[in-house]
Length: 105
Image 1 (cartoon, rainbow, N blue to C red):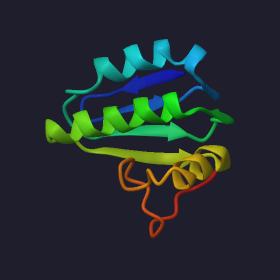
Image 2: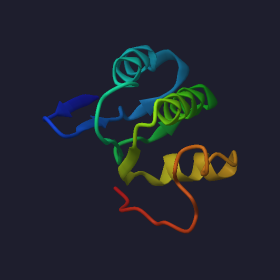
Image 3: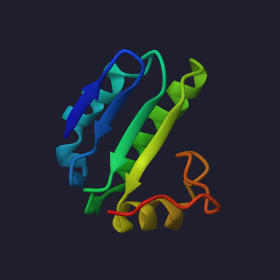
Image 4: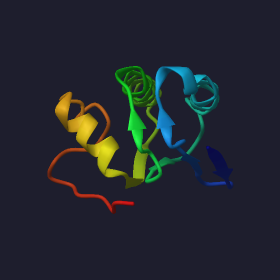
């Protein structure tokens, strides 16, 4: 996972494994960016394993950013991440409506 930031925006690259055992550092990173000024982008292109705990973390992050009126968008999303989001009906919660295709990894 990496974080890049400049004056106007920040970008977080999600780790390949979004399972319960590996999401603690991601949680810390996301919490630190909830109130980040300006738009924030997530790169999910490298994600190859996803659990419901990982998706719950992302849903809470998007909700918290929305509550403080901050923009959060995706730059890339892997097939496993996209599939998990759609299977669980979370596309609207993660700004991934089925009508807006994103570049895949």
